[in-house]
Length: 335
Image 1 (cartoon, rainbow, N blue to C red):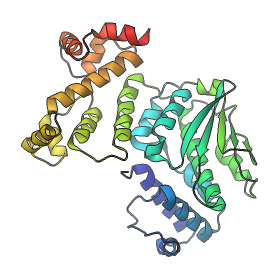
Image 2 (image 1 turned 60 degrees about the vertical axis):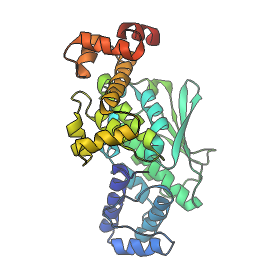
Image 3 (image 1 turned 45 degrees about the vertical axis):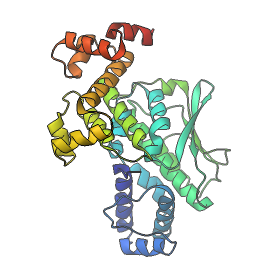
Image 4 (image 1 turned 120 degrees about the vertical axis):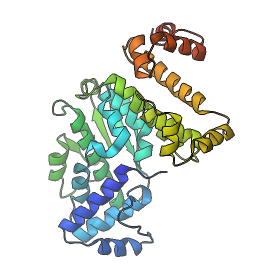
């Protein structure tokens, strides 16, 4: 998996926490190396998977700070999540944001999350199977701290009605949980999860933007599509086109960003049984159907967002792609 900004920001913030505790990066490197972890240059992002467990435990032991993991999560803003963060910010409500977290969380998080219906609301459960009990407690503190920080940034008002349920006994520093999470916390529960009532799930997100959400959602789909798969030219072109939706890049601009000549780009796409024109039309059609199903934008507005100067040209293209008009497609898929 391609390392992302969240992992980088977590690792850099961990180094800042160590610096404030007068612990050097060299001390951290020596401690994790003693447990068989190879330490990269500090400019690289390593805070993911099994390595994160070892780094977090080593840092907590070196600083003798039981609240390190909680504080670490509170310092990570939603901007650290990149495209996924923008997708969350433009969701209509918290329920939609939970669906995003469940679908795309594995691109960013280890462990992941699973939701369960519960009395009209949801239980959002953390799927943690790795590590020792001490490591599991630390990563649980970090993950719920990250989740709390994201939730607070999306809400117009303070979060009410939620409850965090944790499987381990109440620690001596439990008062810091209440200060960091701003919701009740219970210990010795069956699972590590958060209870989200229906009224909270249906609360609008303050930065909701349906048309922008379509773009960010599709960018998340591209990340998921490329997860655990070999990168190819078509995937790179698709990603660049989705990122430039509204003002689509032309083939020359795409070639420049991929550091190849236009001729080489055409040849590589041909080797993958496609072309730049076909890929652009695929992305336009994909976004058009998303706009028609998930927004109240008019056909003329959608045509404009997809780079068509004339609405009629968009309608004809849509009929060619789908054998039906945009209006018929919307009626069929939203009725």
